[in-house]
Amino acid sequence: MMAGTSIRPRTFKQEEAEYEEKEESEHESEISWLMRSSDFMADEISTKKPHCLFSQSLVLLIFLLALASSCQGLLQADSSSAAVKQNVTRVSAVFAFGDSTLDSGNNNYLVTPYKSDFLPYGKDFFGHKPTGRFTNGRLLTDFAASYVGLKEEVPAYLDPSLSLDDLITGVCFASAGSGFDPLTAEINQVIPMGEQIDYFRDYLSRIELQVGPDRMDKIMNNAVFIISAGTNDFAANYIPLPIRKKMFSIADYQNFVLQNLQEFLQGIHKLGARKMAVVGLPPVGCLPVIITLFGFGDRKCIEAFNSMSIIYNNKLKDILRKASTVLQGAQLIYVDVFTPLYDFILSPNKYGFEETMVGCCGTGMVEAGLACNANSLVCIDASKYVFWDSIHPTEKTYLTLFNYFKPLIDNFLESSN
Image (spheres, rainbow, N blue to C red):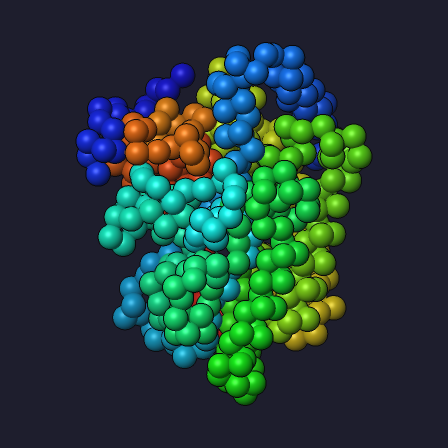
């Protein structure tokens, strides 16, 4: 089951392309069967006595962490490049909204099981310290900020130690476990997308009092907004739980999530957001935890779920095209994370990866969050792995994604000036 997985001889304490599009009807029966399987799992767990629940509940909890949305990345580049020199003067701030693919530590200040402020998370971050990022190192927004010459990391807005300089160059409002469906955040006890807008509104009032309206306008006019959410709505809500399945078909639920996304974009646009990059869904069927729960022992991508991601992403692209004509002054781009990540998984040798079906932490099949901790076995070289835990990418994956997206980033910044 784990062929090709690197040997994990020590604990952390001991050692600190493109997927072809398929029609929705071709996969409806397979997806429906997988949905019934998830309902059966939930029913089985509900009939067990409490003292027998731990291992099964843990797997379900880890499954609910699935936010993998995994990946989008904007990462480091040569700071001496012409693009960097130009972008330094263009971007005033980087703001992040969404889920664990962008959360740099907001969940540290919440009462929620969706946390990663402990080792081995962050073991390859500056100072080898955990910050609340769900990876071994940096996230896309950290490297985006570095690439445009702002700073080396985008901090969490809820961090009480932030200075004015930290704040005015951009912060993260994202919360691991969140989604565009309000129920997703409610289930996971994290910050809903609507409340992330509320925090942004609070941020604007707070900063304007200190820098004045003129400078605040300049910051907003040249700021970039990165939005990454949606994976949890499917992987931690619609697929494993019965509530939304009773209300929506798969297609209707996609439309419901996308309607909420549109309302979110309208909300931040009203507050001054203009340059917005919206990340699509990753290949959900390739997340290690999804393979574990629905692969029935066969460790390969589940294409029915990948097809669901593709259909959603196509709808998202249409919505963003229309929104660009409706939201006055807005410049929106779709960030296709599915295509490169799927290619990493299918052709790992091209990118220097060796393991694609399990994560670096623990067995790599179910561990994430609290189950990936300082007592967990970790792989020797995380850069050989696409995934850090059973859901989230490694820093190396984000870096490789950045190299893929670099022309898109430069074109976006060029066209928005």
